[in-house]
Length: 417
Image (cartoon, rainbow, N blue to C red):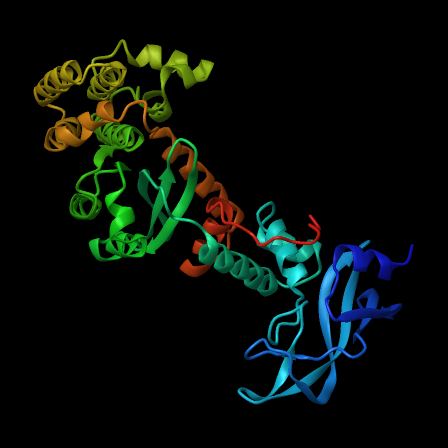
């Protein structure tokens, strides 16, 4: 079977034929060159209006990169025609395998974009002997097409979070759809301000925003303000993961301060190497950390008391009745305010000021899972690690949409990967 026969099967070109296939040696290695010619009596298509028009003249031969075969580069060779269009003037024809002046074929761009979901962009460029810029532009094409053709109807639950993508407090705001049957990234915005977050609801539209039933977020002020304004009918839930993370931050602050004071007083450094013993859940501790925690629990330290308050608070999430959960929360905050541990007292004041939103967790229980947001955040971190070296928010945004956006793709005659 000839290569031309295979190409006609997996990558047919309407109104064009694969005329000749040849193997040539170049400095970078062997290259498969495929000469394309217009089918006899076919008319060129105007690149401006997309209509068949009379031919005007021919330009010089152009080279287009196609998907590599057997580790060898594949190049399409075609002499472009110009058309004489009454509406557009004399313009270059439209060809089905490439767009505009791009030297990569459409099939090759989708091929690179698909592999960019599995490997880092740098690895994709190295494996397929192309440039990082070509991979970037291919992903941008795939994301642009997907965003234009995705369906935003029927969104019932969203989760809001932020990531720091660069030093110097440079953040991106992320909005996910966290319905039971669909979990995907909906929107990425620069900064985490009220102004930037409002753009998400403008993008979504009034009708879709009004249809949202549940919103899950952290306690960041601008998020709370915008959600109350734009999704006022939705049940707003404060994310369990962020609440516990904030509590862990308070415990770590207590531990660090107490360790410093013990060192200044020349006492035994019992808190040395104790950070993860106090921050991790007991069931996740290593054997060595379990022994260390047992030793710490025998000491009357503020860090230990803060740890015990945190472990006691975990019972809050086990309640089924909102009334009993509210009673427990009030009692816990009262005990914590009497603990004389300032970071934990600050945490108790925070919980009191957001009591209604925290208790909404029980109203939404069973209808949405805040664990979905945590799971998506882990995928975000993995994507960020794979995309090391990105220096612009645009590249980060494209990578996140490409990996987490569940974006649609056009129907292909053949999927090459």
